[in-house]
Amino acid sequence: MRERIRQIMENENLSPAKFADRIQINRANISHILNGRNNPSLDVVSKILLEMPYINTEWLINGSGQMYKNGFDMDSIPKEHDLFSQGPATTPQEKEVVVKSEGIEVKKPEKSTQVVENKIIEVQKSNDRKISQIIIYYDDNTFETFIPQPVK
Image 1 (cartoon, rainbow, N blue to C red):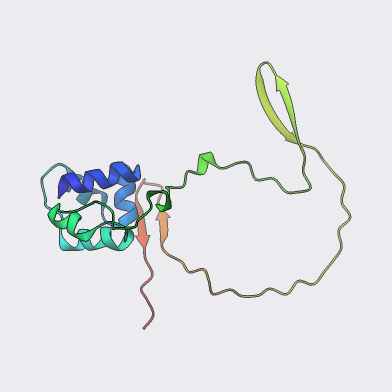
Image 2 (cartoon, rainbow, N blue to C red):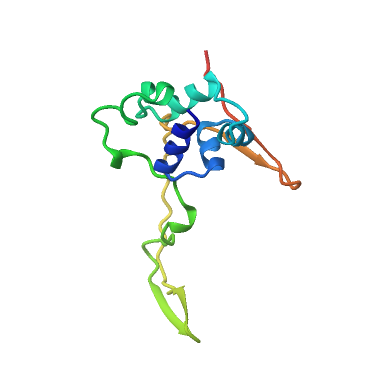
């Protein structure tokens, strides 16, 4: 099963740390599994299948069949977000001006004047978004992850 987990990570383009974070297990557990020290527990297997429902259960557990469930389109796999590949956040009122200085491009927004109207905006609460996890980073390079429990 270790090689199948490694294959999932390769196909999903995830490092062991990102994979552990995605399925919400301790990073050391993945390290021990990949190094052959421990076998994956039922909890690890169930978290993989919960987070990646398109993985064929029989393939993951027994190695039989295809990696992905029948009818699954690989292009529909959610890709890992990269904060650095996102475009710059600009407002519609800003125009970007590119200034070249000693071979370095610097983008500066043009300043524009705007007339602002005071309006009363009614805030509508939306229950569509829910907190999936909270991570607290400490100055000693440790962190804690809190996952909300479903309300009964």
